[in-house]
Length: 111
Image (cartoon, rainbow, N blue to C red; front, side, top):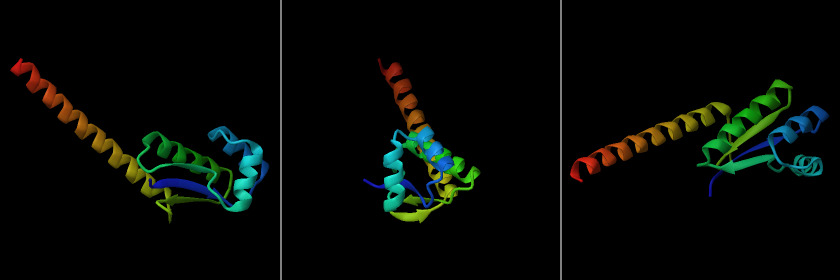
């Protein structure tokens, strides 16, 4: 499945503190992932809550001056594209809800 992830280049105490707050990783796992150039956070491309968490983590890292990079489906991306993706998810959810409501409304009249 396609993923969204975040990588960071430095492992300052402030960076580790932010990552501990936003992830369930242990300090040793965070350090190892940074050293190995692995994702410090990753979620599925279709996981709306995970994407929101990625945006929040990215913004928190940037606020403390940490160089963070977002990856979307294996390619470097940016927070604006994640915002667009979240908007798309929201629009799809709203459209599905409208269709469900319409079908339920028709079912009530046919019963």
